[in-house]
Length: 206
Image 1 (tube, rainbow, N blue to C red):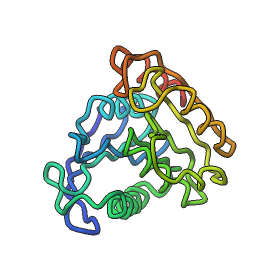
Image 2: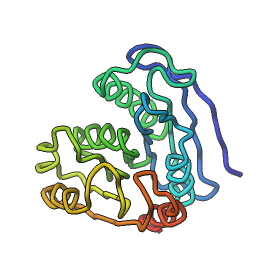
Image 3: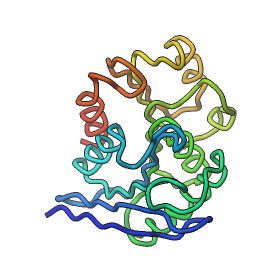
C-alpha cells in the first residue's frame, strides 16, 4: 500500500512543511521535488508538482515535496532563491539519511527547477536532475555548461515567458549528458498537456 507521511522538518529559517510519498512497488530512488515561485502562488500542491509526484512515485521513486519558506505551514520569508537552496539542501540531507541505500535525484518545476538544478549540480553523486519548465528569461546558466550530472529538461511547446527558439539556444549550451523533451501544451503550466507530462516523466524510469 502506498504510504504518505506529513512532516515539519528543519530548514535554515524554521520548520518546513513536507509530504513524503513512497511507491507501492519496489523503491528505486529518492527524489526531492521543488515547487514553482512562492510569490506567484506556487506550492507543493500545484498541479504540475502533483503530476510530477505521481509520475515519479509510479516509476518507483520515494518523493519528498515541500513548501518553500513562507508558504503554507513553512516558516520564514522568501529569500530570492538563496535561502530556498539552503532549505532544499537540508531536506535532501534528511531524505538521504532516511533512505541511505537508494540513489537520489532532484526535480522541480519553474522556479523550483532552478533550485533543483543548482542543488543537483553541486553534488557529484546526483543520479539525475529533472527540470520541468526551466526558466531561461533571466539568471546565471554558466554552471550548467560544466555540470556533468544527467539533466532531463521537459518544456511546454508554448511558453508565454520565452519563445521556443530562445529556450532551445540555452538548452543547447548545457553540458552532456542531457535530454530535452518537448510537450505539446498551451502555456508554461502545461495547459492541455498535463497527461503527456506525467507520462513522459513516468517513462524516464520505465
